[in-house]
Image 1 (cartoon, rainbow, N blue to C red):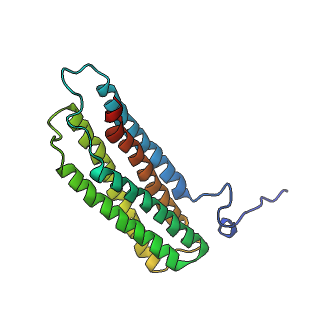
Image 2 (cartoon, one colour):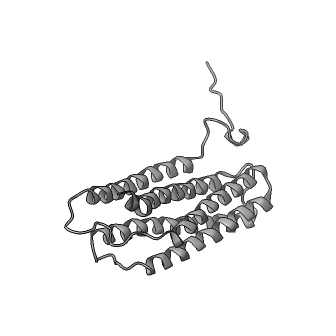
Image 3 (spheres, one colour):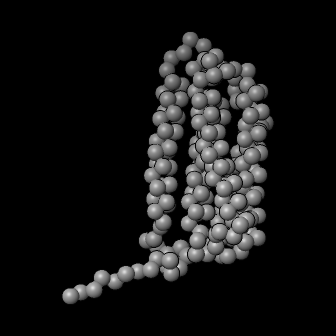
Length: 200
């Protein structure tokens, strides 16, 4: 009778091909679902934008004064998350904490700057089709940023207590995947809402 070989996956080297924690696949499924949501929202924006309008489609040309620096803030936070994940996998607790802590701080800065960006708009959610789509799309993205911040703050707390390391790094990697997704979505949102009005 043939014996079935049992593989102890906890002993696989970091980054082994073919092995991911169950939560990794769950997060991937969640990201695909949320990605579809943003795809529908952006499709609605583009579809509405190309329809005939009696007046200007855009209520006001977007300003890069806050949005562009804020984009770099979010991109820097993604680098910080990668740095924290790298430190976790290498067993370097200082790099782990600096990376995750910096990502949390930059994420909070993004939220604050985005709030002031909203306050500076001359239109509202109910003022026009453009205003409705602008605030809906950026609002949904902000909701995802806040969820990502909750994840990162939780990871930072557990990391400070020494819960993560080279063997137990999956939660940090899973949280990092979500944060990178949030950043990638913002790049598409930024291009759509802030750049395309200048191209039309």
